[in-house]
Image 1 (cartoon, helix red, strand yellow):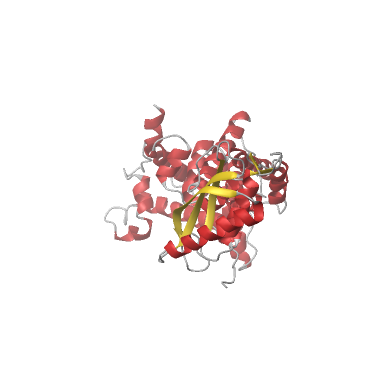
Image 2 (tube, chains in turn blue, red):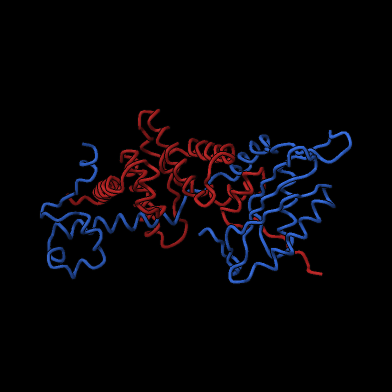
Length: 191
Length: 188
């Protein structure tokens, strides 16, 4: 069975599991058997050499070629996504705006308030009412402060911006707090 | 009037960048590439022992991420998704090429450039030896060992990446460690 082979322990001639030597590598001298057994001592020396070389491997990662990001992003830009076309309220109903372009405007407004950070922004047209939309905007708020006043200010700014910059009316605007972000500079929430 | 302060894209967490990239935000996606390409490239180079193939693999991984973002839910665990994608892409490439990696590729492990000359030579020799020993492991063992000992992933996460059990992962790592130690400094 592949699984039993994979989990078979590696046993030294003295009967000790090599894994035991590995987990006690730094305090092996204090161990009753391992501290004196020549087999364990030799194995420990070998494992220390491996550990030292592993440290070197971690300290010196091979660097990707400088143009790797550029190559990836060239393909990404050639495959831009724009989302659905949303009708703008014009008399002929022929003008549209892309869903993602509008999402970018609303994220921009959110980010430039200085308080909250935008995540995803889902936009759906209200059926049979051109120029009317439902928006769900995810935001993160600074850790440790009451977000209610900032959320109220953001709501006003977004409604104004949708009307003034794009000429759209938001019938429903759901602002959803999805996470908090640390307020210490240089810290990221994901790690 | 409050002075507007723009949010720097490099200060955003992965979940925020992924949510934005899903909506076509190229700058957010570029930040994800800049943030994670080094780690994925290091993994791919050591899996494949070939810089050119590693480059192609990492490029494919990120492009697959860009194309699949609208349909997959990976907001909080983008790094895990990248690890899974990179590891499995490398394993598939190795399977297709008959599981062989070039035995000598001195370019794979960078040489240290500072310190006492004797120590530098010694470290370089150790690294070269470890590089060679790594290439003699089975590809699954190499993946398990690299993900755990070099990239520091938990056993359960590695098991998820390789679609196996934590027991199997522990076993593979123990065997890999025994083989690597033996090749670096024989103890049997």
